[in-house]
Image (cartoon, one colour):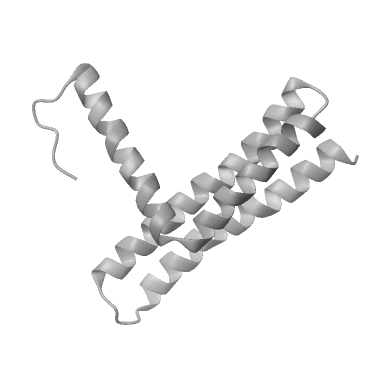
Length: 121
């Protein structure tokens, strides 16, 4: 990623979008969990559209799943930065990885709770 000195307005937005797409591609290429979650997206989004009774229910079912993808992106970023620092074990490095992993777990639990509340109760 290069610095964007001199880029303003629409040019900056286009470059920023390009960097974001590079990040998505890198995560997809290097992170098995993200690939699995993308595969689940292909199943869960149409399922949410079919099972949700209202627009609000459909949006809620999809949004809680997108939150999982967002958490996985942040988790992958944290893990990459920690791994870049060095291969030696360090308590704070392990803690950072565990905490970022916990965000994904909580997001996944949130999916289960919301889908049950919307579709069953």
